[in-house]
Image 1 (cartoon, rainbow, N blue to C red):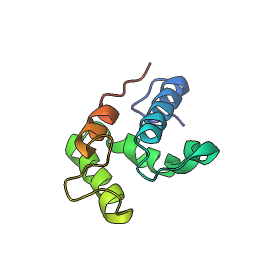
Image 2 (cartoon, one colour):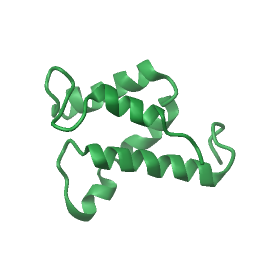
Image 3 (cartoon, rainbow, N blue to C red):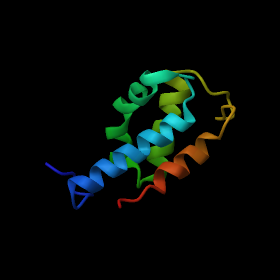
Image 4 (cartoon, rainbow, N blue to C red):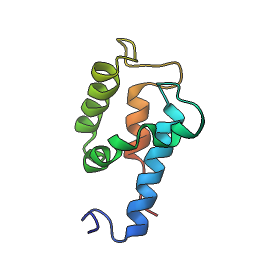
Length: 96
């Protein structure tokens, strides 16, 4: 069954893969090699459900990266981009 936010399976997969790439680029755990492609996939379904609700998405990312993984400082930044920017990049993902 295709999620109601997507017209086709192609759109769904494109969005899923784009978000995975965003998370791989962010890569706060510093995972390397082939494992990087799989590292953040478990979180993508939830991200896709709330990606159009900015406050919910930001809260989820804060919960994940700050509270669960404890890898971002108290300002919500790692050495690459802020959590706000990560949220913006995900929210800007559009189906093809």
